[in-house]
Length: 136
Image (cartoon, rainbow, N blue to C red):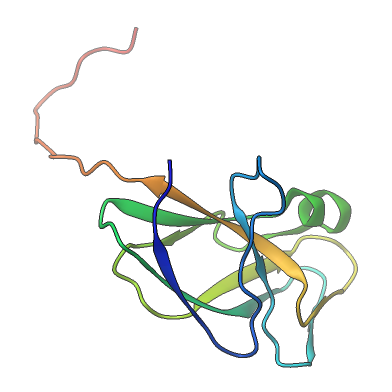
């Protein structure tokens, strides 16, 4: 399944791309305009990507997910677990990174820092109820 997504690049950002034909998500890179950001142990930082998107369909959400290599090798996780980019958000995608290790971590311009995947959205019609079915 394919969806068209317009993309605006700033800060000298590279166009996000799928690493392989089987990749579920595109790589997001740090767009730091030639500088680096140090994340001290136990601290977090907001990293710009220089990427803004506009999906052509409203029933789509872009999910920012962690890179498993950063998490396993360096203890770098997303500060909010996952990022939800609504279909009508047009601002720059920024990634909150949390350093869970006991060593500082340096993010360099162009480093792969997260993944961005596109998924369909189901909108729920919430119906208030006095009771619910029992758990089986």
